[in-house]
Amino acid sequence: MSAPMAYLLTWTTYGTWLHGDERGSVDDSHNIPGADYAPPDPPRHAARVASQNTPCVALDAAARRVVGQAVADHCRLRCWELIALNVRTNHVHAVVHCGDERPEVAVGQLKSWATRRLRATGMFDAAARVWTRQASTRYLWDAESVRHAGIYVVEQQGEELG
View (tube, rainbow, N blue to C red):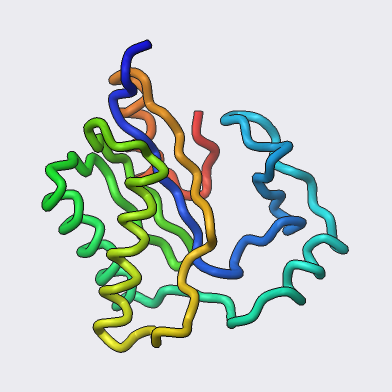
């Protein structure tokens, strides 16, 4: 099987999109691209909220700039092609060609770099959780899927990826 052309990497800030949320969520039973999210589940959501040990994280404009620069810098350092990037208040989308690196490793590195930069600026202290534990890693197999993902990331936030 050939390698994907790129990946659509998406990760959320801590506590802002929990399992059971009214928007639905992705879990082990609802994780196939294009499939429905797990349905809203108020008791599950309440349990997740109760288990949080630090406050929810929303990125302000300054923090969004820091995260964006950290992602771009790390991609440049690793010679990865950053095709599209959008840092939102509660999540990040990046379309990246990262060579032979597995997407899970790439997103882990991007989250780590962004966290270190946020802490270095004093925006977050060492004890603060910034990101959720996992991320979405969509494989983009051809130029058309890369193009669509780039458009979605840059121009269509709030719309479904088609």
